[in-house]
Structures are given as structure tokens and as C-alpha cells.
Image 1 (spheres, helix red, strand yellow):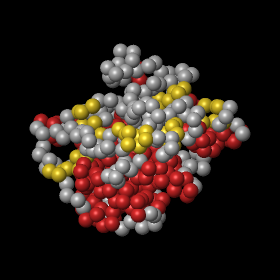
Image 2 (cartoon, helix red, strand yellow; image 1 turned 90 degrees about the vertical axis):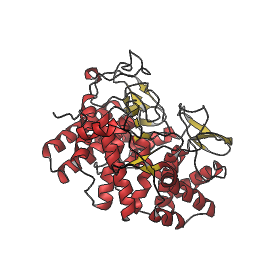
Image 3 (tube, helix red, strand yellow; image 1 turned 120 degrees about the vertical axis):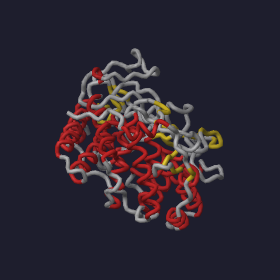
Image 4 (cartoon, helix red, strand yellow; image 1 turned 30 degrees about the horizontal axis):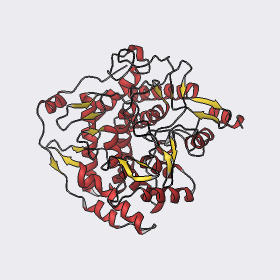
Length: 442
């Protein structure tokens, strides 16, 4: 098995000196898209316009190597997860050459970052690691973004040998971390000497940290592993149809299928009230954490990620649990009700989760309710915060946070303005065995 963990010579040279980076200019195609709002209220239009524009206006800069550096908003580092999500709505306008240049710059930058350190989640402008919290989703997001760009545009120019080696480096880490006992990764924030709580082998991929950047309680985050299944399917498609590498395609599929089997065998638990649902985390030794967190991947986001459709019985059971007081991080107030996170003050709701609720529902009324609740959190700058008190929205965390803004723009484009859903991999629906079990529980 080939595992690409070495840093390429080109990336090593990039790390030798900090590149000069220039602020990006607002793109005409994005400005026109912001002005072209239709189908909703004027308040929704104002929120959509600012949310769509904030990343390109405030967070993107270009380096001499033609890569694009994307900060999170009020934090100057580039998170692989956040950056991928922040530029995702711009895929709708990728027929414009300037938008393509931006997207290709992000894809190239993230490939370089993966080659510097595939265990890191955030990087500085000079390609130095800003934070080495191993979050499985940080390996999946760059592949997902690149594959979606290809399917949306047909353009294969981003898929250089550097990108191939970067994604295969991610694959190598995923394969290794299926048996965490073989790994040398540690982080001082984790128990057990930095290697994390004990886990049993499940076929799934171990992660040290959640998408919230918080330490995982148990080593196997189910939503993260679902997202890895999607990313591995995307990688297999790229290997087969762009790079024509059948051996690497087979390796990606082998890991993907093993992870999915692990999810089915260990990630589903029975509850008297909801029937079979997905756990948030498990340890492979019998322990499970029944909750959901606002950060994506989340259990709420399963159909958005493309793992299985919203009509899946186990997903529907899980969704009812997540959007109920039985989820210890579901909070209700006068202005909004939604999922929060242990990352922020208890009782605070995250706009990120409210938007995801809208993106994964099949009920137009629920979309309208979510949009109204997001309006309730708008304090006049027409941007979304990290989290807010649902009884007093003026109490909030992080006023400048690009990720929920971009996700809201995608919600409006898709569910209000009628743009087609962006491409997702075809995984063949939910596992028949899982669906039969879910049906039998009622």
C-alpha cells in the first residue's frame, strides 16, 4: 500500500520563506450574483448579499504561487475545513473565469498544505502549521471541494501531480488511523499520554478532535467517518477518470467500504424513543455518545454531505433525536431553537446548525422557520455569528465568522432562489441492512 506522507520538494521550498500575499479584489460575477437576489423577503436579500460577499471581500488573499489563502474571518489562519466551506457557494458561479481562478487557487493551496502535514487542521500564510489537531474532516474537505469543482465545471486543470500526491497522503493517514495503535500521532490536549482514549478496532477511522476543534470523547466520530466515505468515493472517481490510476482507485474503494461497514456495525444504536439512530461518537468497546454538535460534519448534515438521502429511515430517526431536548446540545429560546456545541456557552444556538437544518429538510415551512430565526439573530450587520443566546441574540460569540455566512448563501441559492443542488457522489443510498433494522424498530 502506498502512503504519501513525505513533504514534496516544492512545498518544502514554499515553507522556507513567507510569501507576499495580496488582498483579493471583489469578483464581478459574485457581486452580480449578490445583487440578483429573488424569491424571498427584502430582509433575506440583505442577509444573503452580505453573507455571499463577506469571504471574497474580507477573507481571501493571493500569493505569488497563484494559490488563494482564506482566513476564517476574525482568525488569521487558514483552516482546511472552513476555507473549503467558505468558497463552496462560489461553485455556483464557476462558469466565470475569475471565479475559477479563485477556486483553483484554494484547491492548490489546500493540496500544498496537506503535503506539509496531513495531521494539521490549520496553516499560516507561510505554509507553517498553525494548529496540529488531527480532525478527520480536514482531510475530507479539500477532496470534496476539488471533486465538486470538477463535476460542476468539467475542468481538470487543478488535478496536478501535487494534488494527486496530497490526496493520496490523506488516504494514507485515513488507512493508518483505522488502527490507531499503529499511529505515532499525539496531542497534549488528549488523554492517555496524548494518544486519546482507548478504542477498539472497528474498521472506521480514528480522529483526535471533532469538527468543533474540541477533543473527541471517543475516537470514532460517526459523521466524520461518513464524510470520509464520501471523500474516498470522490477520490476513487478522480483516480479512475482523471489520473487513470486503477491501483489507487482500488485502494480508496477498499478503505471506503471498510469504513462504511464499520459505521453500520458500530455507529448505530437502538433507543426506545427513536428506534435505531446514529451515535455521535463510539469507542468500539461498547461506549457511545448520543448527541450532535453544530459543526459540520454533524449527524444533522448527513444528506447534505451526500452520505445517504434525507429519506433514510435511520437518518429520519436521528434527525428527530437531534432536533429534540433529548440531544443535550439542543437549545430553545424566544428567538430561535437549534443545535449548539460544547465549544460555546451552554444554551447558545449556532447559525451553522440552523442553516444545516434548512438545507436538510424536505419541508418548505421548516426552511421559512429557520430563515426567520436567523433574521432574529441579525443585529444589523447582516452577517451570522458563531453562536448566540436564543433568548437574547445580542449576546453572541465571534461576530466575524465566514463559515455560517457562506452556508447561508448556499441555503438561499438552493432553497429560496431555486439553484440546483451542487453535485454529490452516488453511494447507492442507505445500507439495505440498516434500513431493514430501522423499519423493524417501529
